[in-house]
Image (cartoon, rainbow, N blue to C red; front, side, top):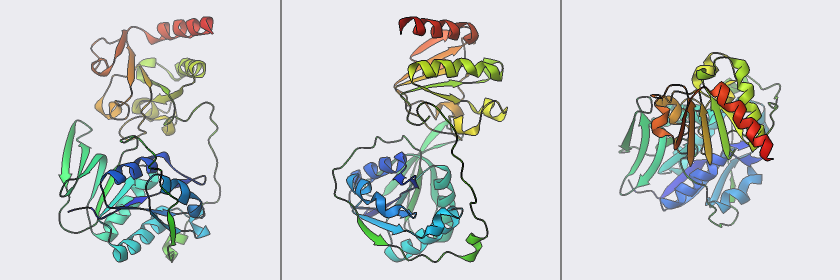
Amino acid sequence: MAVATTWVFAEIVDGKPVAAVLELLTKARSLGGTVEAVALSSQAEETAAVLGEYGATTLHAGTDAAYGELLPGGPTADAIAALAADQKPDLILIASTYLGRDVAGRLAAKLDVPVIANGLDVSADGEVSVQSSIFGATQDVTTAFEGKKPALALIRPKSFAAESGGGSPATVTPIATDIAEQHRAVKVVERREEAASGPKLEEAPVVISGGRGLGEIKNFELLEQLAALIGGAVGASRAVVDAGWVPYSMQVGQTGKTVKPTVYIAVGISGAMQHTVGMKSAKTIIAINRDGDAPIFKLADLGVVGDALKILPQVIEEIKARK
């Protein structure tokens, strides 16, 4: 199945496409054929320049103000499904974000096509195939799409580097939207932005993540102190999120966020595959753990076997002394 047209679902937050959208546009350019973006947001048209720069020649834009007032998954999937039935793209790429996963599942059902989740790479050598992670991220498998179009894939953020293609602003084509009454049953009445200092977890050059090896919640303060000193962000393993120590927004791993920092420091994290799938692409990995046989050391570029509660205060004091 050759790719004549690839669509990228452009998720818009605060008037800008999320970083993973630019990564997907970069990948879509490499597949050949026409690259188009689809965005459902009252601010969609404002993104035509940046989407075009990264490869989209056309932006199918639904700008109904209601998209900002409703839970977006249902009406977004409806609009894309109707447009796809008419335009018949060969491939639809969606970033595996919270919204992306919601939209992809609904869209697959409406179009009666399969969706490949946890995608890591896409190729189109004669047929569209997606490399994805399965069995708790312990195995990678390549799946080829056959039969009914479009091929539909959910791709993990940070799977590709976003690179500008130097393109002109995308031509905006309005989408006629008719939001079903069932999607108007629930409205967003308030939005609260989480207070945070320092860089975002997904964008930080240094990420310091903690696990159950820290012992108790108060010891996360050591990670926060270190992150503040070196301009990093604090992440966490699923175990401490499930324990209620930190919010889900800090979780790194298969069911959390994917990060690709210059330096990743894993503190008190054993290194289960479900965690490492979300950070294994970091340029340098440093592990601190009392268990010298912990799996994380197989992935680490630098490993320190010892008590993090004794090691981190010394590291913090040394950095302060050098500033």
